[in-house]
Image (cartoon, rainbow, N blue to C red; front, side, top):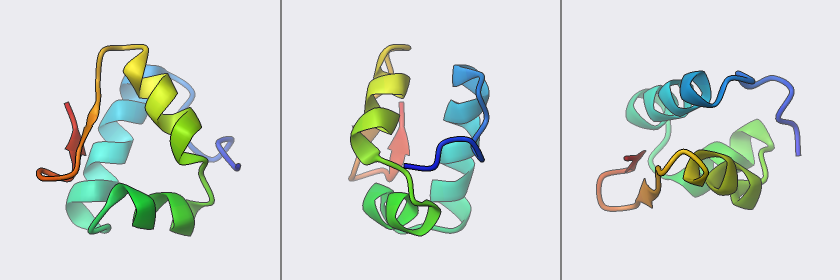
Length: 61
């Protein structure tokens, strides 16, 4: 898992991931594979703020 290239601040991470999902990736799995990010860690990190991934909308909310 390479999370060091991602924003450390959880709110910035939320914004960054949603921007990437909107502009570049068709799914969270595609983003995680391309950026070499552990999906479970990402979902846990954003989940601690109350956000969850919506596959239908391809974003965290």
